[in-house]
Image (tube, rainbow, N blue to C red):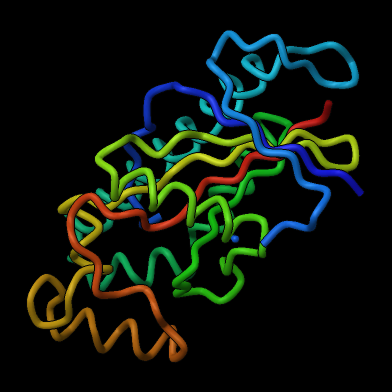
Length: 206
């Protein structure tokens, strides 16, 4: 099975986290957004990158709106409970709207169902290296089994540090207790501002 990863120089999607190894046949190339690389059906990769970005941004907007309302209503501890019960249904509902598979993944999971697979882990490592060099983390495409899979960075901001920051610094004791109760295997704390929290993964048909 051959997997092709394509990088494109488009702007980072500024989305917060509420809400990766390849085999030897992988072929990585750097491509500008107007690349002539095309899918098996002749669609340029730039089209998939733009479409995936739209889907990720739209889904994040829905989650972000509901999460912000949850925090304003009852605080960060309640927001943890909201994510536990509502994040997946909201994401699934947006996937139906866009007719694409949409999910969030990370190398430091809170919900273990969000753990990144080896390919996604490698994408994250590439993005972390780009950020360490003072660059924007570039969206990436993977072509696999008739699907085009877009990967878009989720970076931390002040809002998400209320649940993903440093314990007893950014995260209140009540929120820590809620996290421990709902996610006993939680690994998703200790973040600072503008760090890579995870990825939006958007799977589209070729």
